[in-house]
Amino acid sequence: MSQTVAFVGVGRMGANMARRLKDCGYTVAAVYDVNREAASALAAELGAKDCTSLADVTASADVIFTVVTNDAAMRSIFFGADNLFTGAAGKIFINCATLSPAIHREVYDAAGKVGAHSLEACMASSISHAREGKLYLMLAGDQAIYDKVSAMIEQMSVNRRFIGGPGRAAEVKALVNMVMNINTAGLAEGLGLAAALGHDLGMIREVFSQTGANSRVLETDGGDMVAREHDCWFSADHAAKDSGIAAGLASEVGLNLPLNNATVAQYEKMVALGLGGLDKSGIAELTFKGRHA
View 1 (cartoon, rainbow, N blue to C red):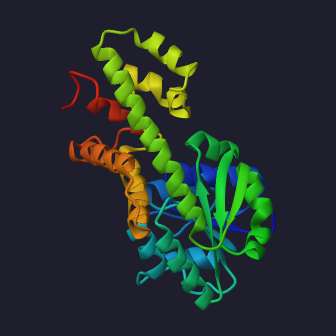
View 2: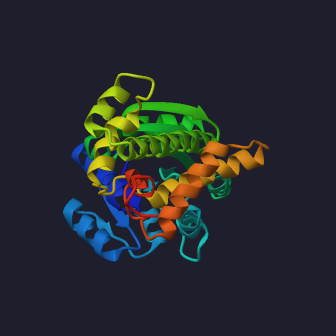
């Protein structure tokens, strides 16, 4: 509990991770977000410093978690004019967002040059899991550095897997989200076709659950697709980004992934239609007759 903690990126996931560590007895010393209102509110709640400078964040804590939106945001916080590497010797950065393996490796290498350390802690869980310390985490970097923060990580997660060197957890997370998004798109098409054929969708979902059509997304998204309840837990914007990361990795190794390519196109269509803020279950809006074209 002696390690002090800071968070950069305090949206719904980052904020709830910070609350969890506070509950576990860790000192959350500082928070930072480009959304100043969100950062100020969380700082007041947790008794943390509301930083306006990234260098100040680094100066305030031993371990700095980052939960940012995309590669560009990651590059900005580590390589911008005001950045987390200022005075970073001895600090540990734990980077939790779903980003390209390349940016994770870039940050890892740059951290080493200033005497700091970078770990990946890619999350495959929801907002409620973050609050309750029930995340599933895929970790990568140096085992010795992971060991230094393992007690903290264990308070945040119900299961963990240390995968290997820099970028390797990000690769696995891209695979997880690629398959999840393909499954979500497939479920939306199955339910959409069933509705067009006039079947009772409660019956269809029950049959799916007992057969080879079963999946985790049937449990999490099936009812929402039918009811058109797409409150955002994992956005279509993020689904497009994450499946796009997988597409980029496939291109790098010379593989064609037609199902993933089609899924990327569907989520990109949602974004183009202004539906990117919907939950990924909103892909059903593209497949049910009489909804969006």
